[in-house]
Image (cartoon, rainbow, N blue to C red; front, side, top):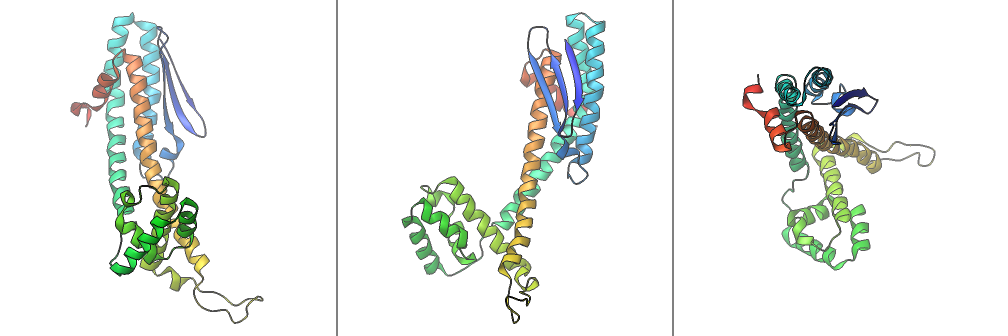
Length: 258
């Protein structure tokens, strides 16, 4: 059995190769350990544990025969990897819940004119995909509210990318309305229009898009945690010669959470 650890600008990577030909790679994205990451401290613990586990796997391979090596690797996985991995899982779950709540709040629908919303839905359903996409790009908050109020399943013929446009447009418009961004971004006189006044819709949209990007980043963090933990399970399964389910149990045993 061979193991190695490598660090790049993108990730820390632990590789384990079994003598029977099986190989596994665990990777923790650098995005998770960045100072701005909500799971930075937990991810850093996992990265440190990966380095220690790599050393132990290599030493055990050189020192023991197969059966004793596997037993040592299992003990080391429990002693070295379990607690940091559980910490990262917990942080990922917490961030996932927070992101889901933030997304639900951002995409919520405020009360409005029911008859007009019904008409908007009827018009949207009658459009082809191109027409729906064009509509989504220019829709007002009341129009996107009409669609979001009905929900995704109401528009089952609408392509997923088009519905994503509707959802994004709604979040952008609602963020502007809730935060008063329109009042904060007013047109300024310039050579083209020395008497310009009123709301600068483009500036308000740009500011709102930054908030939407931050929301999407939170979901990406959760996905990265999931991927990292799954890859660590793969490596531990190969290093310990255990089925994947048993490797997961070894890493998530309650007794390791200290």
